[in-house]
Image (tube, rainbow, N blue to C red):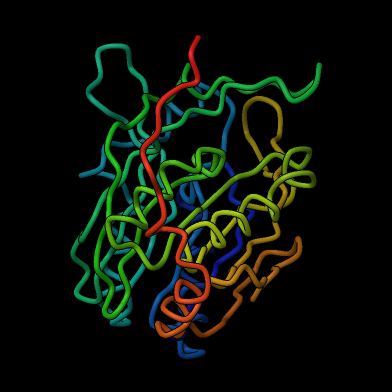
Length: 278
């Protein structure tokens, strides 16, 4: 299946971001892609709670979701919207960080809310408290895309290998990891973790990413690592998008999953065990 990773430098303006994203998706389809993936928070990259309250919408009113569903139907493609930041009806006002699989008919085939929240202090100058603004999901999600089965994850989920093992054991052959990775942690950990998840599961790992410095109307501008990656089930890097926004095309062959798992069938060797004692 010809596949495209879309690398973006989204701002905190969903209207402007939608226009850019639609243009790159159209380019990907014109180049033959039947499956297209966009990064985490495709609709709005912002660290300002006030700005998020101003521009984010519930799922059924979100212009990015509506626009990209219509485009998927128009182009007849599978589309993974890496994630959208969305309003919820939670009493505490927290948002959802939600990934969508859109079918070639424009229908929503699957939704996944990011489970693991990025609450870290990378350095004295770089602190994130995702759980302050976003509420975590609590359910792993699988969906069919033709001859492939997709396991949906988002960004910080990457550091929790048990999630990927469970998805693979449940039948996943492709894992999506859309991200807006920090430049510091990205330089140190992004590629090794993605390759490890592919090797451990024998899955294709597809990781479209945000990149560069993100324009903002409120608050401090955020920077992200870029380097959208596609990794084979054997752990080979098929695509490294570098740091420029754009479209990156490659082909997935379902036979590669069986070949990798046949060589090292570790998913069939998982055993329950006791301990360690506290």
